[in-house]
Image (cartoon, rainbow, N blue to C red; front, side, top):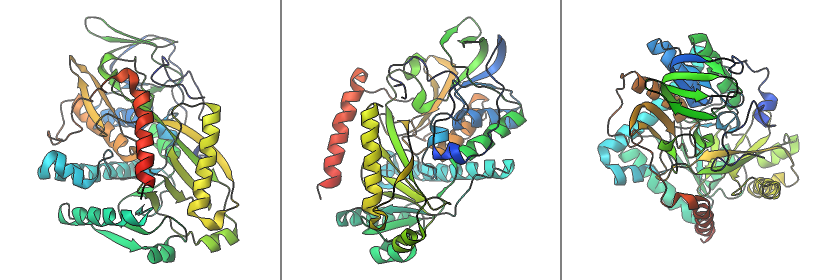
Length: 449
């Protein structure tokens, strides 16, 4: 059972990847440098060996010649990076394009849009440079109206995308969805955009790990930071096997960053459980009757969105919110609930079963935006996180931005809202109560019309 980051002192000690579809199909994984077993000094220490941490280490080494040390509590990619929903999107945070304009104005909204495209470019660059075979699928994202009343929302989104950002999209009606993507329910219309795509997230992580180490980074698995202090010149990070003295530190744990790690992020995180199931392969009859031919990433218009795709071996992956806490009974109920969603959305799959089910923590920030910044009273402590479940592309891009910021080479637009301190939750001690109330409200909004 997953430890709650609001309570536990660190994520684990050398744990292997959970029993996910990704772990079962990733093939042999690259090794790291093993647990830290001695005291050492470094210019930059990075806490967290997922997409952000490894990307930061890679770009520090490649672009600036800095050999960073990465400290990962378990295996690299054990957290969100190795168990996510596999959607590579230009989205930054949870706000829609129209909200960007309303909250921050046209100039900043356009800069955000450009940065989202840059995040996609960073992912493509890493894949190309590393020759990473991570099962990339053709471009395409379908945002599905799960009720007729949500079609107007998609129409408005298409208008803003075209008129403000110059983005191309296609609004499909129910028949077009059935003809070219799948035959199912809760698909009254869909907004289809290009650029976004899907892949195998653990294979991607494995490739970035190889890139980082080849560039000169040192990656210690099974090395959680169990104590953090500071002397006159260095941060001192204690692990079970040794200490790292570092001039600068990066916190890159996202949903697995525990509340007590450093005062800068205390009260800023809301780790929310997300669950995923993967079905058995569809039979030839099920494929024919469901007409599930699309390789696009798909999600619906619920506030508590469900997301799904057809995998290369003709399985269906379905993801959605999990329980408040990772209890066995709660997880079992959500496993069945996700399977029911598959059977509802695809009536032809009424007898399908699930072969895989897993969960993981998603970090939701108070303002629904990621943040890349430094501690208010100590510019030698940097961090990135708060990807709100949409961070495959942006978390890797955040590593690139962190590396530039750490070395004084940042050229990012200074008004970008994610280049600001991560806000604290009001009444942070009651975050779980607030989460429960918000989920009830969202459930009401999603089903009331």
